[in-house]
Length: 233
Image (cartoon, rainbow, N blue to C red; front, side):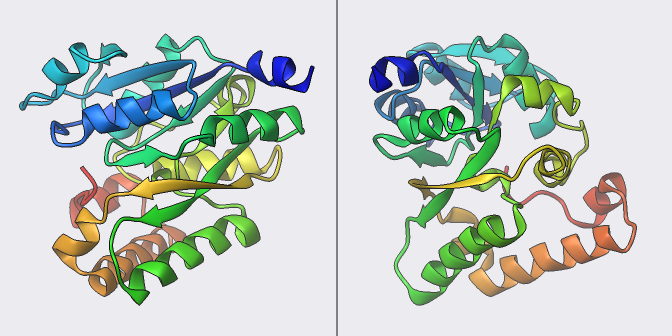
């Protein structure tokens, strides 16, 4: 009876892409093996083989103007699920992750995210995982690389992702927290370590802190975008 009730909670996985040919197929395949009811790739104008590979995979491909917020909103509009799960293309879900989402929603949660497993060895990565998880558990503030999930009615009620060049995940969760506290699920969500390996763990972390501090002091996402070009696309 419980299993049947959970299966009625349809979860759509939405993967925004921009030149993600290296990882898009894995992201799609793992979304299905995690238990997704629907997988949508929302592309923002890739110039590599991303769209070709997605088109050859078991997913629905939608296109929109570039920008993660716009792409995720386009994917959400095309989705049919009661729950929307936004997954970065260089992340992949563990087996059983979608059932964790269903159980959380059945238990009264409206939104949440996952504990991470960054795919690299080293103490700094383990500390990042711990710190990112504590941010959700203590402050209710997950970021996009923790695969935010949200019930469609709540997503629509807060106006979807604000279509800004940066911090769309932070701004969405700020609105959702006013409705209910996000739930942290064990996952894990597997995360490619490429941006930390490219820019350095400490350098990337300090950059993120500076960006957030500037926003708290009044800088708009548009102003921040000129000073902090995205490192995650």
